[in-house]
Length: 318
Image 1 (cartoon, rainbow, N blue to C red):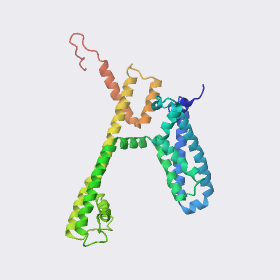
Image 2: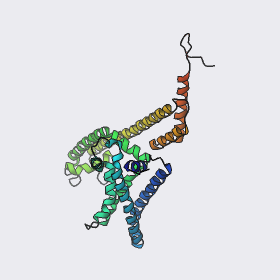
Image 3: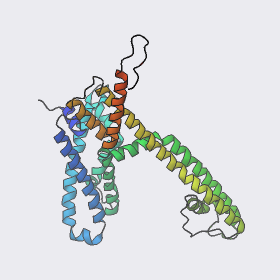
Image 4: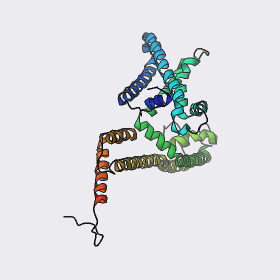
């Protein structure tokens, strides 16, 4: 069988017919990403970096080669993605793929290495750029996928919450400026200077390096602290609610798949494998899957009950 870009896309997206190939490829890339993150962290320790610098360089070259091959493979295989099927050519499909978030992450993961050949870059800056590789975990971690999905869905609510927080910070810094400017001109000499106190107080961090001294300032500071507790809880509640909605949608989606497989009354081995893949991709635990499966069977049995031909009622339970 000819191995075209559609087959390569299936391998990279874990939908290839050979589950072993998908498993080993995903596991290998996942381990390599974790090792890269660990290497970047250890490399920042001077004593370790000096002693094992040659190993770090060899590992970096090896990693960049693998990530470059992966990047080029995904770029070539993206023409097999369903969202690009309406593109007039494979070239245009690849151009569209280049500006997607994950394609940009893949590029930034290898770009520092190639830039070092043309520019003299600070090693600390290169390490920070290489840490972009941690975002590659989004492809292989159900938790990361859920997090990015929740943040994307809740962007309007989060922006509204942070917009309110910005307004409160401005009001808090203005209020403390009026109350404390004469007593502490160095700390509260202007509204921008007072914003540090407003941010630390509203976020309930309270470093203690800048505190009000007047009675009015202390009273105002206590009020801002109480408001800050509610302000911090607002985005947290939005994200928590988003996680709950996301998990509920996943359960419903998996339940529909189970119900479809149960439509004929039997779940074949092929259907069971498909359900296992869906469960894994959705990040649903085995216990939750079993509960959904039992609910689907109960609903299926209820739907199969035969009505009385005379009165049309369902048969009574024994």
